[in-house]
Length: 262
Length: 249
Ligand SMILES: Nc1ncnc2c1ncn2[C@@H]1O[C@H](COP(=O)(O)OP(=O)(O)OP(=O)(O)O)[C@@H](O)[C@H]1O
Ligand SMILES: [Mg+2]
Image 1 (spheres, rainbow over the protein chains, first blue to last red):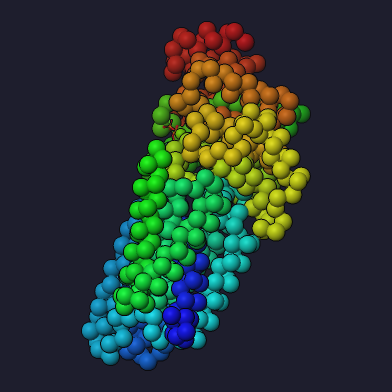
Image 2 (tube, protein in one colour; image 1 turned 180 degrees about the vertical axis):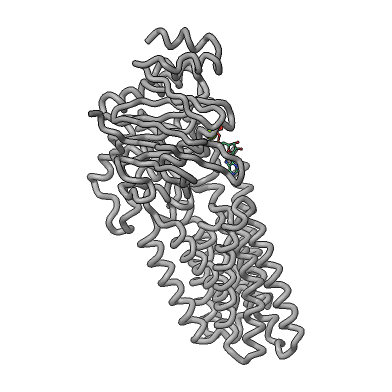
C-alpha cells in the first residue's frame, strides 16, 4: 500500500501525529486537563469552516482559532480558579456555536474530511507543518522536560523553585492548540482528543516512572496509528475512526492483561 | 545577635472579606525548631504560605533572610512541603528518584543530567531520610510517612537553610512519628536546618520544638521554650495538659 503516494504521505503524517498527540496528551491527562483537547478541537473546526468560507487554507485558520481559544482558556482559568472546567465549557460552547453557524453559511462541503479525518489530499504543506511541529515538541521535551514534570507533579513547588508557571502554561497551551489544528487533517477534529488520551490511559496502567509513562504513551500512539491506517486502507474505513478504535483495542488488551496479572 | 531567617511584621491577610490573620508579628531565628498549632481553619496553612511567598499579605511585611518575600529569589534556601502532597493522585507515574532529583535537574536539559555526581548526591540524601531502598519505587505506592520523607529529600537536594512542613504527621502511626522526629532532630542539629512545622498533636510537638506559634482568632501567640509568658494563654485554649508538658522543659 505504500506504493501509493497519498498513503506514503499519510503514513508520515500519521506517525508524526502519533509522536505528537500522546506526548502532549500525557501532560494534559496528568494535569487533569484532558478535556482541553476536545474543547480546542471544536474551536479548530469552526476555524476550518471559517477558512473554507474565506478561501484561506483551513488548517491556518484552525491554528489561529485554536491558539486564541487556548489563550482564552488560560485567561479564564484564573477567573474560575477552583472550577477550571467552567472555562473549558465556555470555550467549547463558543466553538460549537461558531462552527455550526459558519458551516450553515455554505461553501463548506469539505468540512466532513475535517470532522472525521481523511487520507486523501494530504498536501506537502500539511507534511511540512506536522514535521515542524514535531521538531518544536521534541525540542520542548529536550529543554523543558524537567520543568514540565515539575509543574505537572506539583505546581506550587515548581513555582517556589523559580519555574515561571505562567509562561510555561501559556507556551504549553499553544502547543496543544497547534497539535489539535494540525492533526485534524488525518484523525479528524472529533477524534484527535482520543488520540491524546487513549494511549496515555493505557500507559498509566503499566508505567512505573514518569519517563516510562511518556515512552509507553508514544509507543501505543504509534501502534494505534499504524494498525489504524493499515486497516482503513484495506477495509476502506474512515482512518480517524480506525486509529481511535485501534487505540481503544490496545487499552482494552492492557486492562485485561493487567487484571489477569492481579 | 541571632540571625533572623523569617520575620513577619504586622501582617494581615484576608480571603475576600474573611480576615484570617490580623496584624500578626513573629520571628524565626537560625536553628529554631518551630511548631505551629491551632484549630482547624485557624490559618496555619495560610501563615505558612505567606512565609514562603505563595500568598501576599494585604498589609505588613514578610521577610526571608532579610529580603522581602516578593523580591526573594534565592529559592534553594527554602523547602516547602504543602498539606496537599499526601493526597496527590495515586496513579501518578513517578519514581522516588525522579521526584527527588527534580530540584537538581529542572534548570538543565536532557543532555546535561545524569552526571555521576548527581547520582551520588541523590543516593546520599535518600540515605539521610532512610529511603534508599525505595529509589525506584512508584511514589503513589508509598505510605504517608514514606512520602513525607521523599518530599523532605526533594528539598534537601538544594541544601536548604529552612524547611516548612504543613502537617507532615497526619495519619502516621506513633512509631513512625517518633522516627520522623528523629529525622527532624538530625536535620536540625547536624545539618543546621531551621524547621517550621504545623501539627495538630499539641502534646507531642510541644515536647520536641523550641518555639510554638499558637494561632487563634487571627492572632499568633508565641510560646518560647525559654520564656513562659504565654503559657496561660495556651492553657486557656488547650487545657491543663499543655501546661504540664511545658513544665518538663
Ligand atoms: N483559598 C481559600 N479561599 C477562601 N478561603 C480560604 C481559602 N483557603 C483557606 N480559607 C479559609 O481561611 C481560613 C484558614 O484556612 P487555613 O487553611 O489556613 O487553616 P488551617 O489552620 O491550615 O486549617 P487545617 O487545620 O484544617 O489545615 C479558613 O477559615 C478557611 O476556610
Ligand atoms: Mg492547614
